[in-house]
Every structure is written in C-alpha cells, then in structure tokens.
Image (cartoon, rainbow, N blue to C red; front, side, top):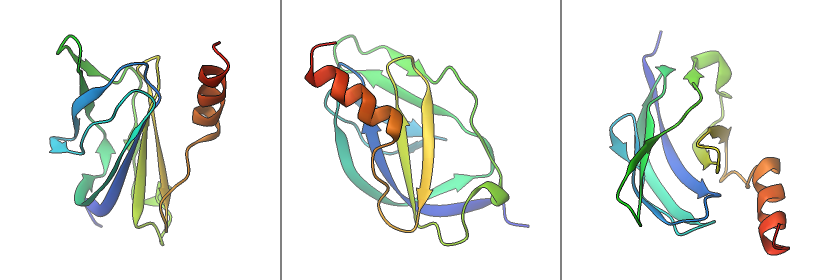
Length: 120
C-alpha cells in the first residue's frame, strides 16, 4: 500500500483578497490574487490521510487554516490522476479535485465568480 501520491497542483482561490504562502502538508503550492489562480506547481507529494492546508492573507499577514477536514485515501483518487486542483472558498473551506489533465474550476467556484461579476 502506498503512503502518498505525487501530483501537479493548481490553486484556485475564490477569496476577495490576495493570498500567499499557501501550504499543503508543509509543501508550498504558491499564492493567488483575489479570485485568481497560481499556474501550476509540479512534483508535490500528497500523503494519504488528513490534509493540512493553510494560507496567509496578503493584507494582514494572518495565517488561515481550512475549517473543514479533507481526508484522502488511495481509493478516492482516480487511477489516471496526474493533477490536483486545490479550491479555496470564502468560508475558509476547500475542495480537492483530481483529474488526468488540468481540472476546471468547480461548479461552486463558477457560481461564486458569477456572483462577483454581478456585484452580489
């Protein structure tokens, strides 16, 4: 049984402020402008089990941790997965999406982007 998986990671932030020092289990996965992305970080080792995800608010410098619990098992990750999209939401929760190619923004992220465009 494997203990981890190595993936390329894309960050999608749906926050209203820029973030930096985004850390996934102690590995830096970049930063993002408000409602932005960071490109891609390759070769990130993601362990199975409970995930630790934190980021820093670029305005205050405050470190924020996800409020929800994300636990990965080998069975949850598709066999052909090469990419992980880390999606960070305004309620300080996150969603992980695995794919064989760069994952698109999530349905929840698309709704948040539409609301922002329309001033809601």
